[in-house]
Length: 205
Image (cartoon, rainbow, N blue to C red; front, side, top):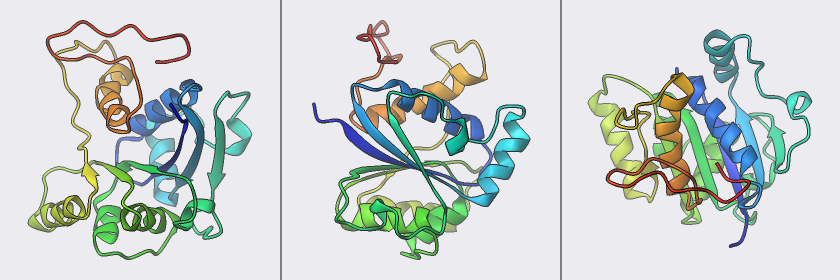
């Protein structure tokens, strides 16, 4: 299996724990993931500090020694490789995805690197997964989700499941993130209804 290059956009919707679990799991998938490009909005950093303190906001200084290449990009850095369709990043996850970001992607408004990368992924017919986090939903939200789905994107709401009996908040968030990684085509250990959890080869989680 060819290793994937994945873009992760993190926006200012509540649910920073979903982004944390996603980054932790991607960093562990060294045999399936070659590179992760991370873009955070300013609001995402504020929400992270509010919801996950004292866990530091992800940054190049906090990478440590990882088996997966992790690169951070400024939200206004349009020189990032995945700002162009010529790049070989073939999957993008926006997690959590605010309704503002979702609306701009739906409207083709590329006003920062997250929305530009999503626009590129859609126009190149690649895989875009938006982990939408909002409740309740207005008709505007629903219509924006419909437009993105018709354009080839996947709306994966941040709606955790409980039948695996998660023991803590991270395990609960993982019930969403495992589905996201499965949608990416990655081989992950996850709870599947009617079957025991699949054992994972070394280095997978």
